[in-house]
Image 1 (cartoon, rainbow, N blue to C red):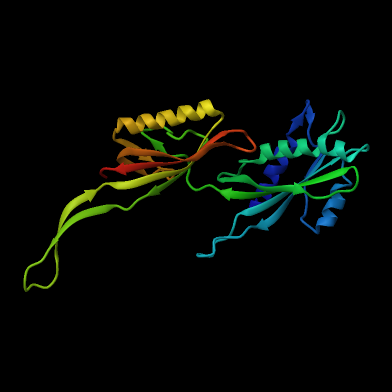
Image 2: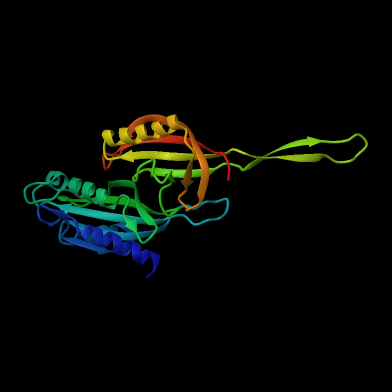
Length: 278
């Protein structure tokens, strides 16, 4: 199965499984060929409402220095209709599921959706896309990003940043201390090896928890590690083991925030470690 087919099938199956009040949220869910926007809007306007089209949209801009391709892009078109008014199509009524409800439910279901073994969906933009009177069309754009690494990093066998956080591990240089000397009349410089010195390792990213209490617990555990100063083994997302590591500092970057979709508590952060030996 191709990458595009895997992505489309995963999104269609997820949307088809959404429910509202014990019945399906969407009456129509299908993959659709990405064509001229007027043709697509015309097609979805003839479907049974509420409706959703899932359309692959090629790849986004890639990394230019090494000419790498960008992430796959996906468009989800949502449509709601009311025979009485635009307002009902927008906000909903007793027998009408409004496009506002559709957009929130679909975005919550698709954000961070696992696609295949190492890909996930990220919502990048959503906006109204027109529609005739009584019909509201809504367009959501997603990117499918590939995960780097198998799992979150651990310190002393514990996922110190929590299971939901975004953590990027950066290994600093391995440095060797030396003493250099020379002799009068002799070309060149002689060097004496004084052994390895501490390697800096940094965790950067965003701490995430379901609520403020959960995030407080994560931050407290990190601060206890800083105070303890114990040497432990770190395992990074690529399953590389780094022994004799000590957590030196914990930096909160900016203020605490909230995820616009899930309501999770968020805190950008940086942890500085030193690897004392190999």
